[in-house]
Amino acid sequence: MPVPARRHAFCGTPSRKMPAFPRCNAAVRHFFLFRHRPLAGDFLCLTLARMNRLTGKQQGMSLLEMLVVMGLIAILTGSSLYYAQEMRQAHRLRQSAQALQTFLGRMQAQANSRNEARLLAVTLGPAGCVTQQSEPPAGCGGNGLHVFRPGGQGVSIVGFSGNGMGFYGLRNTAQPGHLTLGNAAGRIRVVLSGHGRLRLCGEDAVSGVPLCR
Image (cartoon, rainbow, N blue to C red; front, side, top):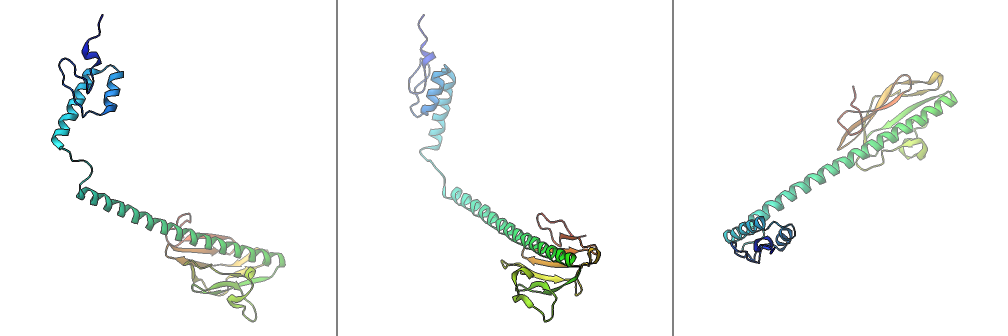
């Protein structure tokens, strides 16, 4: 039995009742030809041809559309850079606070092992430091193992609870207090309890650090 002409009709090849639409996409012709959907293919090609006549030969984006897209890209890029900078500052602050906690833990271990007092001497500011009280005062220019410095990058020592904070080797006791580090991302406290426990807490919402209570 001969195959009807419409069964193999597709865009570009006229059937008995549907005209040819040379502007129809080749992928559409291929899809409907090999899946034996000539009626749907003819209808889709007719729709595309009508749309092509309505829009003329205009293709691409208008100047206004391009300006809108460029504005959205600029806004998204600026927001991403701002949040990335804020995350880097929070990471630096958290690293400095953890380094200070480690430094104080090392001082505490020395006080306990030698059964002697180790009190803190603190210099505030971006160029400040934390060291052990001594006679004469060592200042911030001493040995790196016995001096903590924030390490720059915008982090500074912004608060100290007062003199007398430190460790006493007898029964692992300590004079409670706290040190505060800060930068543009916020402030983090290194808190020392009377039982010699060291912990971190944030005066502001800093990622990865619980808030101070």
